[in-house]
Image (tube, rainbow, N blue to C red; front, side, top):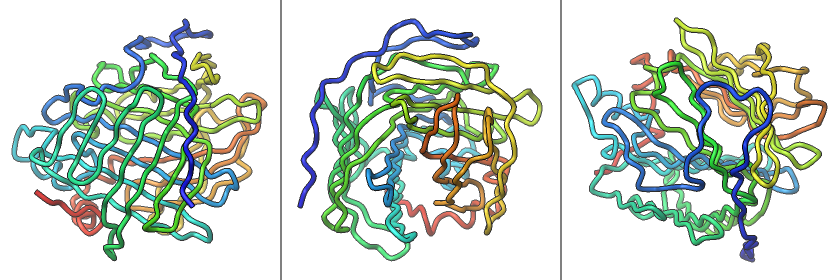
Length: 340
């Protein structure tokens, strides 16, 4: 049976944030402009994640203009300046019960891309804003077994925010928490997958390759027991101090900054031994369940305390130092085929 999406009107969280506002904070138009310009050699992505209400399933979706984790884009940049729009991808990953996972990420060139302020279309898949929610219509093939992933994912924000935060000291990389609290409805008949749950939507953009700005980062978002959303960030560069953020969002999109603390180490992933850290750690997580264990990043389910409130959500660790290794990039095409 298909999921019936909930259409709740979104508010706009444009109020002045509270707490010690960091340098590099600004405001921008709320929501998404899918036609936003992207620098050559740069990137823009929109990220969605959600956890099912029963806690047994999860999804992540990343929509790229300038696919930062693409071996094809990296190889092209080594030869010179490259148009970001020639390396786009619609990445969707389902995490089912008992560790069952389905992954789709096919890179396509600019001749398969269409976008305007309210829509993005890449090959057979697209996402559109209708004034209340974002509807992603997925029609892809999973790797490595070419299983069809077809259906809809609807993201209904509780609020659209106007917050923008600089992630580096040269003002070349930015993070926009578009809808930290959202409702996500997943309806993928080809995979017999139908559920609803707590979700999250943000965006990252950069005027240069991601590896030029960062050696890596750790990031986590969690929905708290009081209904707020906590986000913790630690972006690192080998030659600079870590850039740390600790934020709490309410359903209306309003933002409170907290004093970020140093991160603490978490167990490495079991296969690829990726380093993980808990940004602005307050206590040891009570749950750290690995969803993705790859040569250069890890994604995990996490449960921990944030400002005295229990929360559950997603944790990610990224090593751009690892990604830049040629041996890592030679492993990626089987997970990320390219069609032109």
